[in-house]
Length: 115
Length: 115
Image 1: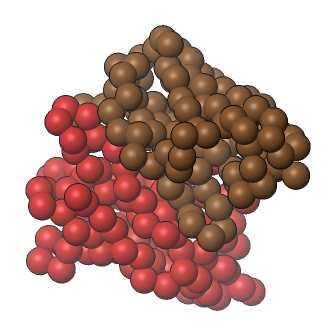
Image 2: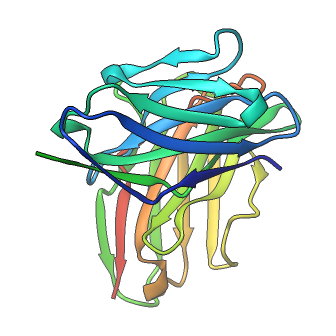
């Protein structure tokens, strides 16, 4: 079965600093990878996804992630953090069973942005 | 589209009572997922359906939990009898499931408190 590991349950950055949230995956087949964001008292919202093709994927709110097969990684980055980026971020991999698939999520990383 | 609609948003019930959570997926989506989120265990997949058929219910914690999807536009998650340890936020998500490309759209969640 596919799985993801998110390193660091809490990350704190200063406003304007680089954001780097780490995700490593385990998959026996070419993976479909996702990053979701969850704001307080909200559901999860898709930030970006990798399916096939270009390995650098751009998402909403200035986030991007790069699929690196050799490193089995899909780290999320943003050049300059904003206070509004404070949220919990989840990496997920698609786990295909027959013709249907489910998302397996990591444990999440809570991003804190300080002044 | 209004997105995935869950009801109620909040539910407070006494231990031993039956609880029913409801979900209306996005029209046209063929997969529906029920997740549970707690501080201790993070985001757990309870069960998912594809074309109204349960595919994987291995995440359902015990026989007190049951889920149904009588048609493509409605699903319920029932807990009978409820216990305090069932207190959590329950999310429903839906997707148009094509191979492994499972971009799931989440509802706002139901916050369940069992006292």
